[in-house]
Image (tube, rainbow, N blue to C red; front, side):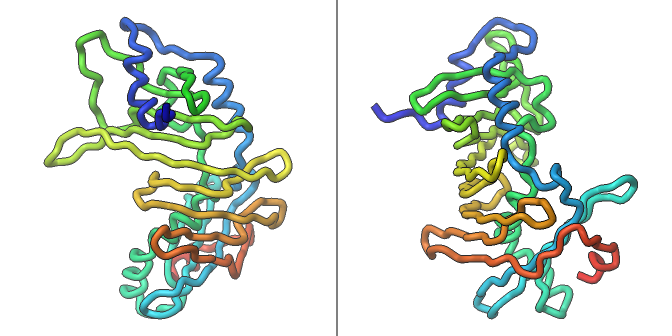
Length: 268
């Protein structure tokens, strides 16, 4: 019998775990597995990344475009800033249009830089459940169930998130279910998924391959890393397109923790 996909497991979870009204439920094994995975994954900003800029080239019908990314983390009263642009186009309006057209490349390039905690904001009051499946163990975070016969509350935001664990205790698949509000359709639920392969660097693990639609674009990419000023950062990124093949994006002009002024952000 073919194992059920994680998405179906998560959708079935309410039926499998149906119960009378109750307080928040936390399965110790499920929570510990989630917390342990959180500590294993490398997050550059948590390891001292204050600012970064880099470029890479993309071949388009308009020729070679040099993409530029700038980021500065928040510090004290100084807010976080980020800029994504095309460096070799002079006209600002044209530069903005091209940058918007290459937004997929932005999402691919920054994906490992801004990995967030699995216990993200909004999950604090959720049930934490454990499910055994044919594909392995799953941690499922979801809102406490309403009384029997009552529909769950529909309001914009996270509805449910499920993690399917690999043998190293890392997520090999994550499914997020989110309520969204549309002026025509009203409140509806949409599901996003991501699958991962990981590579170990010392005591931490970094994303080696991701297939995700979390950002709105389909991201299918591989990553290689190197240490810069004591921080593990992507050194080469491979964009994978099932129809077009692989596209190597070599990171150039890398600057780390050198300071990026407001004037430099404004320049682009």
